[in-house]
Image (tube, rainbow, N blue to C red):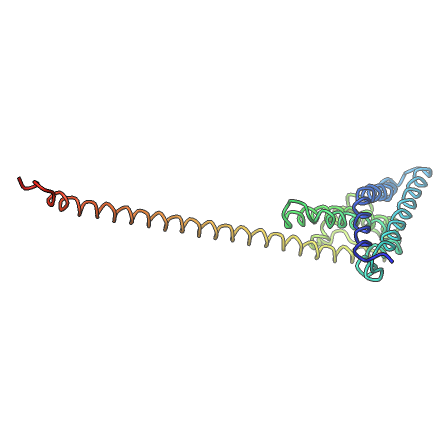
Length: 258
């Protein structure tokens, strides 16, 4: 039977090799999902092509999940820690959010990068925020467009609504009226709170780091000043000793009084 460390190494190797293909596949899925929504007049063959791309990518992600589950040393622990992957595969309405998860995985793979943790978190928080706003705008427009009472009927309106919602501003000029649109709004509320928490934590970390650097710089400057003052005092004492001992040593020499 394969030992857990070796199995974990194989799982890590699989993840490392499939990150880029999964990101590309996620981008293709998002493009195929967005095109018919942004362009309602897309011909039938175009919609069929987009559906085929989404189906193929969905199968690809499912195969990737099964391979990772098979390679995992502890499968139940893998299912618990990758619940979002399973939810995306089982709930087709959430498949447009798959690319967010791919970017999160990419951030975990690059956790040993040379940049600081705060910079990495900030970079992926910005990418995730833009992606969530874009996907939420697509989802709410897709849900609202068929309702006669809808006030969100164009993609620019949907983007504006998603941006004001994810930042918790909520002007109220645009709002969903369908059940699907309200479900998207609820998910976006939660994502907005989480993203604001990440941004706030990153800013707080930056301020604390800057304050600590300032304190260390001030402490180093004070130490340098103290060392310099000590050297000046030593030099003064040495000069004073030389001046005090100069005449007496001259007077004590033989023949000095002649």
